[in-house]
Length: 335
Image 1: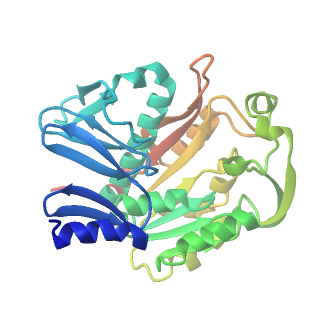
Image 2 (image 1 turned 180 degrees about the horizontal axis):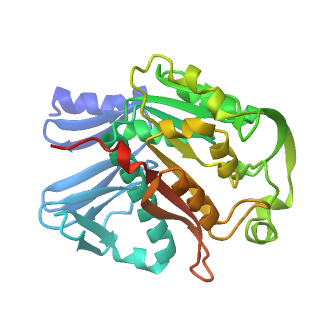
């Protein structure tokens, strides 16, 4: 005779509720999505929604990894994991051997991760309490800082109307994240920006190299924007911070030196900065990496990290680096 428990389980699907029976006295119920049962080994299963794009891989004795990927069918072979020690840090990287088949993607992903971690560490070490996010796009950089634990003020600048609307939406629940629909440059003026290039919108036109590399540069339209000098905005942006220790992040697709020039003498207020510098120039009129770094160093900043952003698949050459620089004299005294 069926127990009342079993009868209820049989009834629930008729009410639009999905049921996965785990055995005596235990079941998982869900209002949407069929459940996929993935065996992990002896005495252990994982239940995942079949469209949730998760899979499980063996990472050693009594240890399993849940991966955001398409759930593999029961009985499918697990990835071949190997543990790689990260120097003397005591940490290990769990690496699927298949990653070696796409070395460029793996290296760039690692560089991106390390850059974000390094910036977060520098913000903490130097006591940064205001980040100027120039070329904010839809707020990816600011959201990442929040996930990494930064709690100070963020001031983001994005000039284009459609992208700014998304940035404004992203910031609306964060009381210490301010957004401005402005471009920044070396003078207060009006200008136009090429749009339709996704995250690569720029005031500058593409170079011959850029057009050859990116198909998105083949077509374009422009949008009129306002451009301001940063030194004229600092007092408003820093209002309410008793002892400002600002950090300048620039990602303006070849226009970083113009933004930097617009800080004027107030650049001395900044304890650190981050700039995307080009080895192979994607935009006409953008500075070479050597020129950009020399300018930053002349203003008292010194490099603490260089991380490749893009690399040519055909040659391995780095196209652009994220360059992080800090003002060493602004480092806190350590007892």
